[in-house]
Image 1: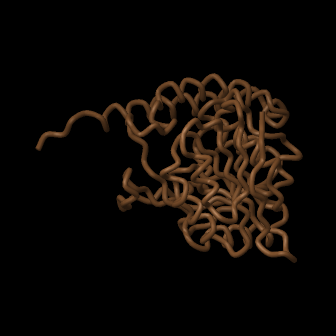
Image 2: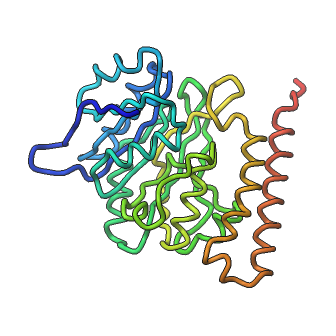
Amino acid sequence: MMRGGKSYAPSQNRMPSVSVIIPTHRRPHLLRRAVESARAAGESVEVVVVDDASADETARVCRKLAGIKYVRLERNQGVAGARNVGILASSADYVAFLDDDDLRLPGSLDLQREALAADQRAGFACGAMLMSDQSYRPTGEVFAPSHPGGDAFWELLELEFPVMPLSTLIRRECFLRVGLLGRHLSGIDDWDIFVRIAEHYPVLVTGRPVGLYRRPTPSSGQGSSAQAAQLRRVARHQLQLLRLPRAQAAPAGRRRAARGRALNRLADTLLWNAAWQVPRKE
């Protein structure tokens, strides 16, 4: 099912400080830019590219990318499955996820690693993102964390604190405590893991932008463009997250309030997206 490729250590005498996991499937033209952005984001970065059973030029492109760890999956595992394989193939104490069509900003991994090293309690650090169009031209929008940091369990559970994988750096020990990503949670595996981590660990928020996020379109092939189906999955899965020990220990009224706030947030998102797609008059 899995076959490994090149291995990489930033130097002969030093282990990497951060592992960046890049899952990819049939988009070889995007890989070089993503890999280069990961390298520029830190001084000692291990880049793990997980080829999720691509049947195109992906393997050939990866052979030409010096200094990466390349892992090929013989059967498609989906984004969460590929991320899990990347975690298991990586070696650093801190883990970042980078989609093949997004970019990390220079120095951003070092910034977040230093913040986590200074606060051993925190499970992950998150920062702001710059939004771009499909050609990587910044739109001028900045997606910034809406939480000051600290205990963010209920805000994440209620969808009041949206966190994107691109904007985060995660302490490896978190996966040992809460487990890996849920392969069956297509499109929401990241939300699920952040809630499960926040059940046990505080969150660090860094103000500076750390990544460039390519805004999805219906034809872009990005999973988040099929948002209505994704929001339905969120609504169903929140019921499972409300069974986590910390949620179950709270009063029933607190859980009902969390459910109501999440459903209201989902409804608002659907309405906003519908309004955004209405043609504007010139």
